[in-house]
Amino acid sequence: MKIFITGGSGLLGCALSFELIKKNEIISGYHHNYIGIKNNNFSSVNIDICDINSLKDIENRSPDVIIHTAALTDLELCEKNPEMAYKINVEGTENILRIAKDCTAKLVYICTDYIFDGKKGNYSESDKLNPLSVYAKTKLQGEELIKKNYDDFISIRTSLYGWDLNKLSFAPWILNSLSEDKRISLLSDQISSILFTNDLARILSEMLEHNLNGIYNVASSDSMSKYNFALKIAEIFGLNGNLIEPITLENLTKKHSLSANRPENVSLDCSKVENALDWKMPSIAKGIISMKEKEIEFKKKVIVK
Image (cartoon, rainbow, N blue to C red; front, side):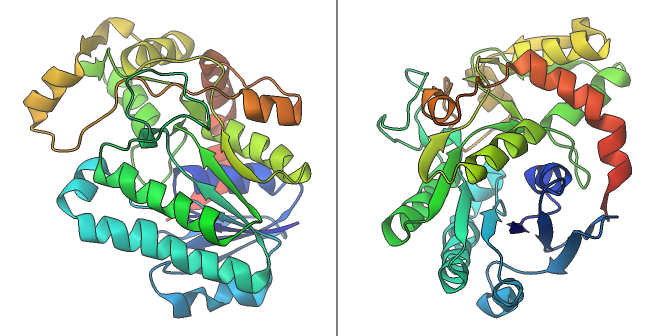
């Protein structure tokens, strides 16, 4: 398949290129940071999802699949700049949808577990949606836009960690902090089924081969707090877990004067995708082990600058 990825130099975009290039031709769309992989089946192009004219390059490549990962994901930035969040996460998605229609390409949309309010956990695809933040609301609007106007789509609700080559994302921040013997505080009462990006890429590859359509939760088979996630990272990477301290969501919000509301338990029920693929989702611990094993190869092959 020929696959076009938006947000190609981001956390998930890099992982998708790294994993999917094994079987497919990959075209990676980037905005600020160039991405490269030394492979004849890889190319990259500069695009702006908010500028429909810059997206003609996608249409000219005639992809079979468009994976839309580009988004404004910073919760606080979205909360303080709702117009910007809407422009990127909703209007940008509308532009990508238009291109997908013109190309008759399958559209894969990356959504978020934050579209749930976190009051019960173990959410299925049919559970009530109640996003608490501007970020989550705009991501849900993007999903609803696609669902209403296109049949050939997959929307993936998930929460991710992995190697990010252009900024310090969650898991690498934990690793860097512990490696430098810095004390860190992580939420003890915010729970998710966080998934390794490369595992999502492999699962998505199977979903495409099975020609799945619709909305799916794709996450780890278990769930834990961010505090326990950090402890597990310390254990697997051989770092000092005593540097990690628990903090409640209430205290974190007060300490940093956070404005965006965050859900407490957004663990996901992935039985729908497991039944469709006849696969068991990986555990969080297994994902962290994979992250450690892939570090050298991933950083050697994927170039972001």
